[in-house]
Image: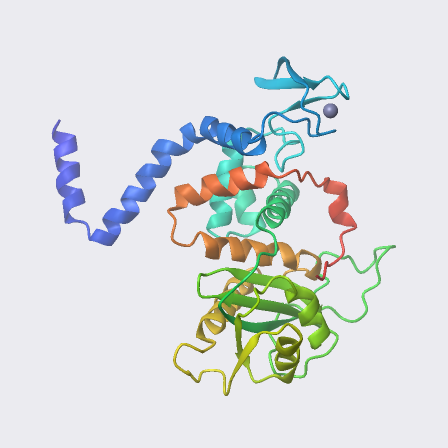
Length: 345
Ligand SMILES: [Zn+2]
């Protein structure tokens, strides 16, 4: 096998970083094709971890009802409706095979635009848009707002409100002002009601809360509304020296460490992790050239999800994105996206 020998000697000359890249690539091409069956099985096991239950009425009196398009169907003896393992999941209504969704998930992990994802996967741009938001709506439901504990760093990010995608001449929609081109970050620069406040908190275990909080500057009541029950008692809140955090820390009986000047460190108390998360988010969201405010929450959860799995190999991320987005019952109809409004916590 002279070809194999020369290939091996070629591989040996690569740097260790190049060898790692090659390894990841080989792993993907050799295993992605075989993933579809494994994913179907994982979705099924997670969805029905307490036995087969009807997704329409929650009854457990189920029997098999033949196959349709190669997929096992079931019938509920209680409500008479049929279902399969993916009913009411993100990809349930899709006519495309699971491999296409895996390819799409890979594009999302790479942070590609809707257009680029469409080109690679071979779907049209409108479909690419719906796939992105169907997956993200489900991921949002799957990971949820979450909670933080212990030493908790908190901050906020301001982005200009964006009406991208709402057509100026639409009958149902009036632009309140000229649209900004980009979701420009405006921290500490004349914050007004045209700006969206994203609240962020992170603990030292890496748990993250990131939510669309309000328009304009936040009040301590808004902070309280988001964080009540989501920051464990006796936690210590580290923030910049904004009085609103002080006020809300007292209300929630949390320890409070205001960090003067932001970058100052008082031993283990500092806000460097949340500042770094904020910069990463800004850099990441900037690539999308302005995200409509009504879809901002989905992008925030996409970013949060990528943070949670940042140390995993791409192949694991692809699998997790598809499994997790199909375990939850979340089949948003394409028509629902047309009427979507920004959802503040
Ligand atoms: Zn039923």
